[in-house]
Image 1 (cartoon, one colour):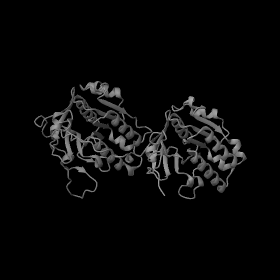
Image 2: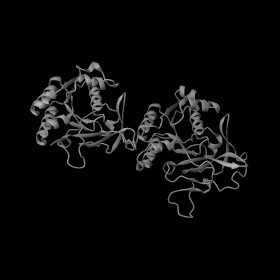
Image 3: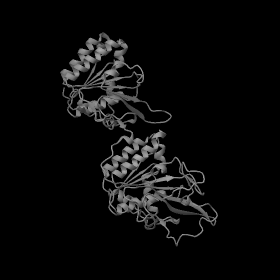
Image 4: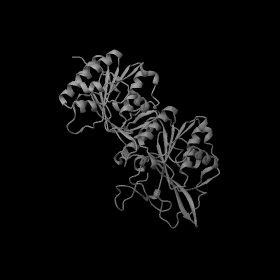
Length: 499
């Protein structure tokens, strides 16, 4: 016996081919199940119009008595709908009267429709109707076997939908065992996730990505957002030896010349300490050197960022209009992290940015509903950025405004913190002063001094050691950079490594 390489047919649904490990089997059978309103009809019509646009004729067969005009009324508002394809490359038919007569006539009608139109994709939408009228499992099995075999001989891929949700961990109906691919669509989880979900239960002979993946239906159609940690790592991009300037000479000096290329740095601090300004300095300095940057934020609209930058003497709008800086804002309502991170990857690919800033790592962390995934997702983000030669700067908002201790246990800093810049308030002579320290830099020397910094008409200015006021910490405990950071697993009374 000789084996032929498996041929896949792309679905045309963003993200789904990645989850399927390449696409649908050519001449295979796909079963799509889920409750009413889960998006089954949207999925199959989106696939149908994609196939038609590629010159592959499609036959759509409804088993319900619902006329085709009702389908056009509901699905015809989607961006993928092309009325010019109806009757030319996509043929809509209803077989409800035949279903009542018997499965033999249904079988003949399906095969004849595929043959007469030269179909390369046949959609049977509503297997539940056939099961209701013909509940015998043996007869049902013979029907599916005969139809799928005949269509495969014609070079046609079969797609079947059903609203019956089988028990995938128990006794399953024959369509599940006979299908080459089984896909489930689910409604949003009211309590944890505000988007739909898609799961591939079965995909014969292909390295599909198991587990639940986020999905969303918009005016463009259905989009699948694979779990972020399943994206393949690209080939490592060589990084330059030179450090990247933060836009602050004194801060660069504290970091032995700037941010190490390909590294991940976190600017952590309380509200109002200037974390976003740190990002703006970093991106605008990169643009000045001709290096492209990407800023991802969750709170401030673009116009507010431009106004903020301008009030501190920084020009953000100019580099954005010149294509050197790209700003993406996602309001953290009804989002999941996989959706946001997929857009980050797309923008990095599209723009070729080598400087990435995420303003609000705490927001991104909260978007990962499954707590068991959080550390893995964030670690993989750092790994992907590093492989692409991207130097990343995050902000992390701490809850404590003034005080001697910070607790980073359970936070992304435990996973991502290659380099940590700590921004703090301290009380000194009846006033709040801002102080900065480089808490940690991995595998590189750095300045351990505590510096005062000012926010004024030119943005952030880190003061030199001789400019910083003495005795800022008098009367309070030492800062976290002086071994006061709590870390998970520390032995009582033991010393912490802050290098």
